[in-house]
Image 1: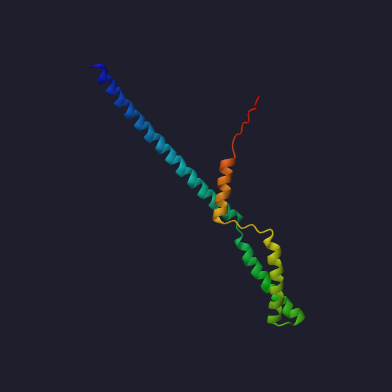
Image 2: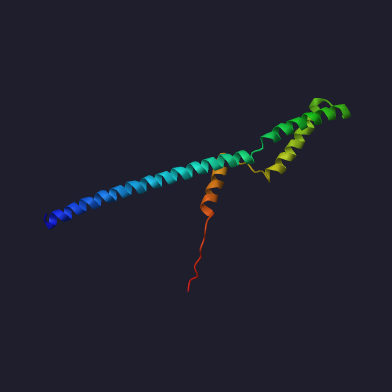
Length: 129
């Protein structure tokens, strides 16, 4: 085997080896990206479920019906008068509640999980001399 042939064979082996390494790196990067994405989606769904308040709507409706009944009995008011008063109370409560409202949608939960993943970790700051 001559020197040119040896160089060509080594070059082919090197190209094949680098192609194998590139495929493995690409596969690993793709697998890592997919795993991280699935982890974030699952975390967002769990967080949204934990932070949502489905029982509060049901409780509010029960309390409203109880208040309507009590007001009708105590003050002998009609349902229209009671509903007018309750609408005014709801409007006031809505405006007060808007200032402290926390609405955890899927996208806000996903953003939260993404910020947690990207900010938690070891941070080393080296002194500049």
